[in-house]
Length: 174
Image (cartoon, rainbow, N blue to C red; front, side, top):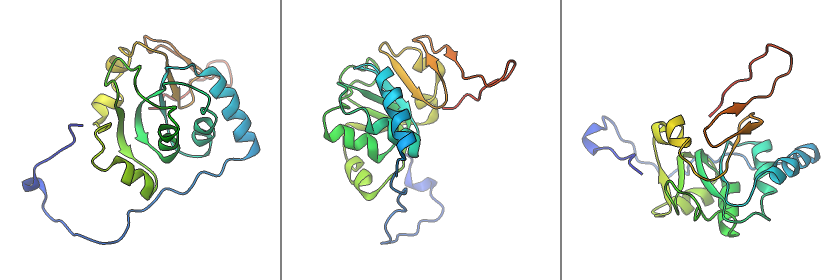
C-alpha cells in the first residue's frame, strides 16, 4: 500500500538482529469457541471481514474454515487470518474494492505472519483513511462483517449496536 516514506524523514535508525515482538498465541476457551461458532454461522460466503485480535476474534476466525472466498479489509492482519489464507478460505477474489488484496493497517502476530507479508504483493498496508473510512467501507458491495461489538451492519454501514439497558450507547470500534 501507500505507506512508504522517504529515508530523509528518519532522524535516527538503529538496526538490530533481535526478532520482532510476537503477539501471544490465541488460546480459546470452550465458551469463546461456542461464541465463535455462532458468529461464524452468521458470516456468509464472499463476505469481507474486519476483525481484531485476541481470543474472541481468534475463536471466530477458527470457525470460518467451511466458508468460501472471504475477503479482508481490516485494521489488523493476524496469524489466524493467514491460516485461513493458507487453507483457501480467504481469497479476496469477491471484493469490489482492492480485489485480490489483503488490506490492513498493521500486522499483529508472529514471525510466520511477518514472513508471509514480506514482499507479498497480495498484502497491502494502508493508513486509517483507507482501512477505517466509513465512506469507503460503505462502498463495499458484498456482505461486510465487523467483529468489534456490533450486532448487525448493512451495506450502507448503518449499525445495530448491542444495548445493555434502555438509553445505553455501545461503543463504535474500528
